[in-house]
Amino acid sequence: MDSWTPGSQVHQDIFAFKTAKHNTYIEIGAAGPIKYNNTHYLEKNNWKGFSLELNQNRVNQWFEEWSDRKNKIYCTDAITFDYLAALEENNLSTHIGYLSCDIEPPENTFAALRRVIEQGITFDCITFEHDKYQSEIDYDPIVTEYLKEKGYKVAVPDVYRWRKRPCYFETWYVKNDIDYTQVSFDQWRKDNL
Image (cartoon, rainbow, N blue to C red; front, side, top):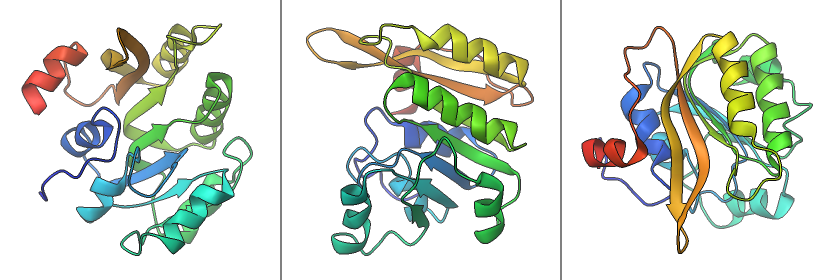
């Protein structure tokens, strides 16, 4: 395991690295190639996958500023994207190690999550950004119920970043067949960092 390079906001990449049984990913909402990116560290450790980002300027950064990102990035709308065609294009199966869901606003993130799940793709673990600290609608229980029906359980609830107070913005999930006992974010950080 390479040393961790800061990229993801709150160590989503470490969660995936230590939890997923398959070294593959789909990243919905990639942002830049390194800063605030949930898969750069994984790719450095030979994971295969692809990323989606709607903002063309951010996608351009992947090609103009950083040559170490080799896995494919698509500049596209995650809500209408053909994930199955991308899996075939990238020689990936319909079971993936890690799904990162982080686009704006949360209702779009949920729509993208439903799109990928309803195409028959499954995951060992998922990080979902619901932005409950600033969203008018709390998507956390909505997404949790949806994923529960699809065979997932909460692994780490109330993931937060600190901005004068804890800002709860994500929940992390695992497939039911993965042996994982739910822990608080504080306990997860204590055990894994």
